[in-house]
Length: 587
Image (cartoon, rainbow, N blue to C red; front, side, top):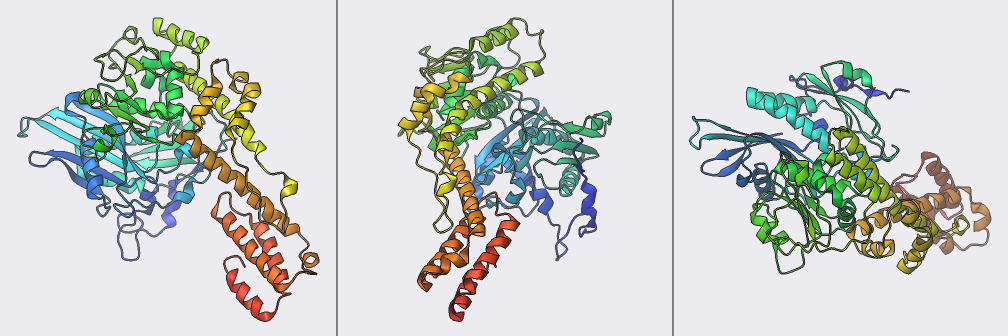
């Protein structure tokens, strides 16, 4: 059955100004719809006196702090050593510089309930999607025309925004600022990116058709919009908002796949060095996607330069390297990061596949040893053995690259990564289920029970007999890897989220038991103070449940209101009045 398509035309019923844009009460353009997708669109240019400078920003009243503005300007140009002539595309990720500075608060987060965790807005960071142009121009004193168009957003829609800026920027370079304004006006008519919806998004005379992923999607499946749209040249179908070509991004180091996966899932510090910002940005983004559906919980910077405001923080030698993945292109970092334990070096795409040996862990090479060969340079001893079948497939593709299309290799790599991560998480999910209290332990007269404490020794006992070795062909010291993983931010983030989800289920179950409880029978021998304490306990339980997701069903709320009114009716009038005020939000 075909999915429904959300047409942008439904917005015509909203209040419009003379330009066809939604307006607020004062007649000013309202950017509410635009802000559901982007924070701002920027133009960064090179000024002979100032260096990189912010030339334009839409909306014009969007405020960036000085630190954010500096980071946007410097990171929107490739490092000078890259020698990027013509057009170059890449993306970066920068930290917001503080609460209230430059629009660092988030709105519209309710639109993303039901989206996969890895595609929810990033409250502490901006993503910048860059289209940089550098061409010779004798009319310019410096001899070159250098300018970037940048999409700033909180959303990690890597594929969608990369294609968007690829359409917007060339039109801007040809037609100037009016073209950029027209593009922003089009985006301001878009519907919200609600999970599971197929959207038709107008942009500069073309329609982008895309389906927004949902939590309910089968993991690993790629559901694209209807193929009917492909018949029209006026419609650009984006099969996925976020999928990367892992084969293309990580081709030089695929022989070390299991090693790299271990480094990422345990949040090891990794430096990725490449010859261009495009290569390093795609590689870093590919690394964090290797552990999907787990969300990478540490910081990562697809493109990082010496001008980044956190350069000193991440390159200090006064402490161990931070748990972060940095993508760099400047050879200066070979010396600066020579105390980092893991380097992934990528060759240019123009290099042949035979030049990609993909060195294995334990080679004795470390960052800064002078090696310029592509591969993984580390002294880390992996817990897992290589998957020989997967390694054979990769080696076959290198010896005869024409036998399979790149897209086929990409699917195979994604499937391998998903199977590895899923096999790793299944024992954790199974153990978490054992920490859930029994249904009979949920009583309407007591606060809802909580998930029990995670005990590592007890969990490891379950791994020996029912670990990942049952669902994956990869052998190794799984117990040792779990011991390392439970100390990592990835585990802490995963467990905190899953624990909260489990506790919310218990809260909803507790409220359901309250709805079915015989209040009059319970009250028959209770003193007033006990009844009041019980009501206050119910209020706290309701408050906790309403703050979390999924929310309390309307049917449950109505039944609870009836129960509360029943109890209140048996109390003296003065207490009724006081407690009714307490329950104002719920009655």
